Structures are given as structure tokens and as C-alpha cells.
Length: 352
Image 1 (cartoon, helix red, strand yellow):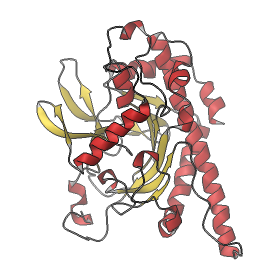
Image 2 (cartoon, helix red, strand yellow; image 1 turned 120 degrees about the vertical axis):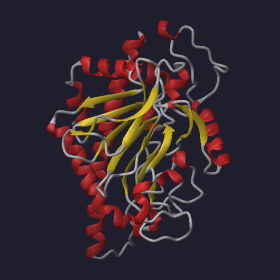
Image 3 (tube, rainbow, N blue to C red; image 1 turned 90 degrees about the horizontal axis):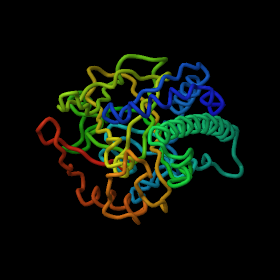
Image 4 (cartoon, rainbow, N blue to C red; image 1 turned 180 degrees about the horizontal axis):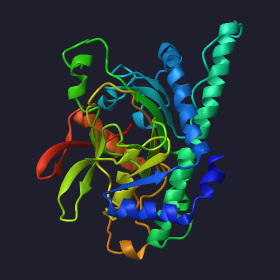
């Protein structure tokens, strides 16, 4: 459904997104004006929200504390043993990696009516999630074709050299919420929730990332999502993403595309600022990632002819492992980046 609808969008939509990613500090916005596309997001968000309590109580769905966050699939709570990183201090939700799906709803062979009802609800949820996942991938693939045209590459270059991305990407549906009970000195309670960034400054370990927020239509702002914007005079500052909602796909350049293009497409640094007031905040994010066996090479484009890489044989799997090791070595400490002449925290987030 999403594939045919998005295929009807004019090529100029995707070409404009590619130019924006290049010239607007790694950010582009794509309007999803078709009501059917908006309904895909709306239904998936509603179904996920209604099932989170079920997943929270079904420990067979919980991501193991020992799991590799870059390849995990399942449920994690906010700031609990399954949350994988401090990036999820204020988030709970469902994560899907490498084309994997959720496990079947728990229950025995002699299930009663309630178990049958849970399995029916689970099947409906999986259907809605599949539709949302397909839409996110279709958007990403069209954006990549726009980038190919902008760089003068052959059509399908990214899939031919870095794909198949549908088998190696990660995506998630998560909602933001404050912990209710203070369990130790580092846990933030509802009282000071509004003083903490909901998501620290970072870049995504992806080629591009696609984000859709759970808000009707197209609305001003993105509920605290800010990105580092470089002005005409070269100064950088964090500003609000201008619009979001079911009718808007937010696109970020990830650190992988920034790496292979020598920042011709700059990786977009972003974070989520603390809320002005308590509000529902939920989003779906796709991290379009290369196959782990794909070599990270500079695309053969005249625009990139001066880009040099130290290694031409490094695979995405190796690169991603290095990023993960650097993250684990830091054990929650931040990496430094320069923002407006000041040191600010930044990380490449294994699970954004």
C-alpha cells in the first residue's frame, strides 16, 4: 500500500530532500499528504500504545541486559535492566533489528479464551507494525534514490553496494515517560523530569534515519527535537525541527553517510530537549543501515572525488563494532564535540 502511494510522489519531492540533507545541516522534511499514509502511522501508534502494558508484563519479550543493542529485538522499559543504554532513561518501547519480528505472544498449548484474545491482538499489532515498517523503508529508499541522482550515481547504487538494507536496519516505536519511583540517587523522578534532556546529543549510526511522530497531521515543532544548524555565517546553534506529525517524515543524515561522503552530507547532531509540560510523546524511527558485510566505500561521484578514506576495506560490521566498543568503554561518559565554541556531549547512539 505505502509503496504504490509513495511511488506516485513526484521525483522532485525526493530530489528536494537530498538537497536539503546536503545544505540544511543533514535535515530534511517530507510531507506525507496522503491520508492513507497518515493512517498507517496513526493505527500502528495506537495499537502499540495499547499493548505496551502486555509487553511489560511478558518477560519473554524483554530484551536481555546482555543483548547487543545494535541487533536486539523485543521490548525494553524505561531505565530498567532491558533498556540497553542511558538513551532509554525516559523511553519504553519496541525495537526491531535485522528484519526480525517480535516473538509470538506467550501462552501454552491449552490456552484459554483470554490467551486466544491476546494472540489475536498480537497478530493485529504485528500487521500494523509491518505496514509502518514498510512505509519507513519505502521513504528511506526513495530518499536514497534522490541522493543517487544528486551525486550522479547509477540508480540503485546504495542497495547494490550497501544492501539489502531491509535485512540489516534497525527501527523502533517508543514513547517517552518519566520513571514514577526513585530507586537510587541517579534516577530522575517526575518532579525534576522537566529539567533533563529526554535524549542526549548524538548522531545516528545509519546512512539516513526516518522519524515520524505520533501527532495528528502536520504540527509546528517536534516536541523538543532539536538539531545543530549551521547558519550562512558558519555559526552553529541548536534549533527546533520546524514540523512533525503523521503527515511529516523527518529525515536525518546518519554518521555512516557522513563518513563515506566526507561530510558532503553532514551527519545531523540532534537531541530531545526537556518538555515545557507533561505531554504524550511517541515516535517511530528507522535507522537505515548497510549490510554488516558491505564495504564502506566512497560513492563514485564527481562531487566526492576529493574524499579520501584511511581504509577502503572496512565493513559496516567492523565500523559498527568499533562504535559500540567506544560506547561501552565510555560506560555512560560522553564524547566531546564542539558546539558554538563550547564542549557539548555527543555520542553515536547504537539504539537511538
